[in-house]
Amino acid sequence: MRNPFKFGTVVDGEFFTDRVNELEQIRHILQSDNHLVLISPRRYGKTSLVMKAVKLSEMPYIMLNMQDVVSTEDLSAKLIKAVFKIYPWEHLKHLMTHFRVTPTISVNPVSNAIDVSFQPRINSDTVLEDAMSMLAKVADKDKRLVVVLDEFQEITSIDKGLDKKLRSIMQLQQNINYIFLGSQESMMAEIFEHKKSPFYHFGMLMRLNNIPESDFQEYLTTRLKPILEEKADAVTHNIIETTRCHPYYTQQLASRVWELAEYQGIEDNVAEEAVKGIVLAHDLDFERLWMALNKTDRHTMIEICQGKNPIHSLDKATSTTFSSLKRLLKSGFIIRENRYDIEDPFFKQWITERQK
Image (cartoon, rainbow, N blue to C red; front, side):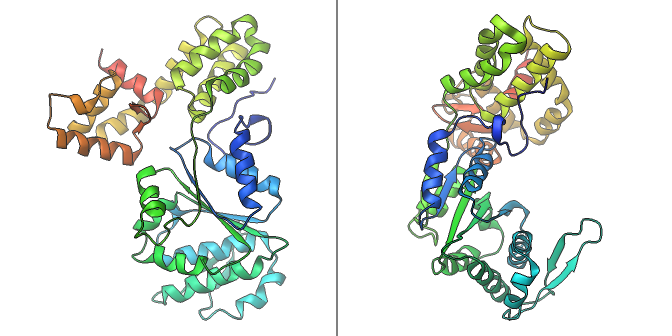
């Protein structure tokens, strides 16, 4: 029997969990002339959700992770390379003749993939305009192009003025749907909701929340019942209690539970044993993360693990606490919903055990 749980990669098909309403909403946006801004914490399934919607729309798409972009020229090269992946050379070569700065096109002999690069000291605005022009020319009203830009908040750290330049080009384009994904809520809000930002209200804003507990309960129980039978409901409850319905960590823990039950025959306290196994497997990673934090941030993390609100702490100044929380939120160590919590439940368990 194959493990019915999957995590760590884009999921689809039987591995895709719920998100029916969000999926339908994105599909409707793709059928319009509007763009989408999708915000959620890391590992909430933004990419899987968007990819499923795009594939259902049967529209051609390209996807870039802005964390991989180091300059305006690099962004231009990556856009051109992405276009080459979905359109044949014969369809594109005449477009290249209109480029004011001709890129170097080569074929990687190992992967057979096309590489795109530009000579140093070129005009970055010109190459960006050429690359964006190519996107507009390959798209048409009968076959709109979808451009997905992941971790879009990184645009603020690439090149000064890049956001303004991109917006000035995008606002004139037709037959393209842009999807902007971001995991840093405050930075994404600054980009798309601040009146002085070039991207102010450029797309329809959507926030992705946790999958409802009732939906996850049904999803997990159905897949665990064949091996855990009457214990499946209780184990599912233990999984959700640990992961708080976080999509990635729920799939990770459920996958480990399934392996212990299927291959080792463990049924009693199987969720607890699975948590122990995951924490142990990541011990060195957690140690490295912990040692990289300063003393103040560690103290803040410990208080959160203990269920305390660091803001009410008497051990340090309020300004120090707010600075620590801001750093930890930005780096993804903690999340804030109704209260502050550690983003990774297994890291939280590791920290808690260290304090005993």
